[in-house]
Length: 411
Image 1 (cartoon, rainbow, N blue to C red):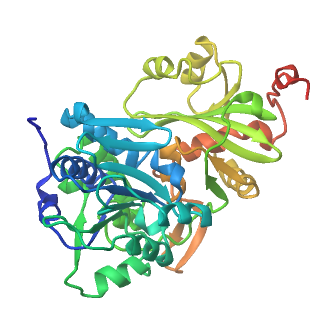
Image 2: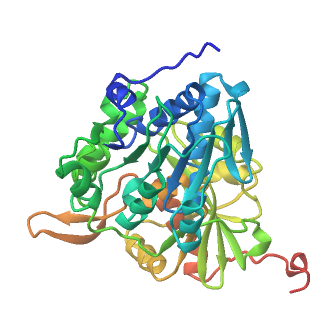
């Protein structure tokens, strides 16, 4: 089989490395996850007896990260005839008998599933820990202990960690970057190194460098930093029933954008808690294009709360049949944040852009006083804005859409 694989030169040393541990820190958009997925697909095709486990803190987040990256790599490389993909459970089966499985370490049940993992052909030789800074050291020790026993000639054990270096005090920095070990390779990459990175993304990063230099240090330059001043910690990423009938109320929130993202979220309200059910997150699309993309994804009968600064766009959505209404910004931002911080927020794993934003959205820091202000940093917050707008009806306890109770079996 002839495979046309394109790699970024910055990752060539990683491809050639046979050390047990590879710690790959880098900026957002550096291509490290795409490259890692592509390399694993080719490695498992070429070396019978190898098997891979992909690990995230929560197992459900694999679907829209590692699993999505690996299946995309299969399609991009044109090797779908060599792989069988299953969705329940998530797994990739190579025709040579090698296999890729997906696990989490979020609780004791998930850890036990990881400890007991076996393969019918060969052994567990490779582990990819995506967003590795989510894990505690004890989680890593469980994973490391799984790679043991004599291997056939030519095979080797390897754990690869990919992550944004969010904290200079993290155990990964201490154990793999500060402590020198011949069995460890450390690697650094940025979006600047990624020859497949588009110009629009580079412009967005340039804006972040100007607006949020502290965040740009981590997410733009891939340098160790601190993410102090995080605004939200009251959220959980988990699977849940996204059907509107499941909730006490539903609504949509939209933040308009073009160069920065245009974000739409489908939200639910149940037992005093907020659920983020679905997202549409696009760049450089006009309103007509976005309306076409939203067709069938968002219920037109649900209230859609939007940025009131764009009345022309709101009018277009109304013409398309949506119940679009403006939300006044300005001083209401802090009030919206305070309201959201007082409630648990459930985020479906498919809402990957909101997850990325909420993990890094921070208060602005007053460097002269070395303390955080009550003003959020207004960059990479498009899905966050859609979330703030979308809860407007519940926050003010008005115009809440209540599903027809007859659809709930008379409950």
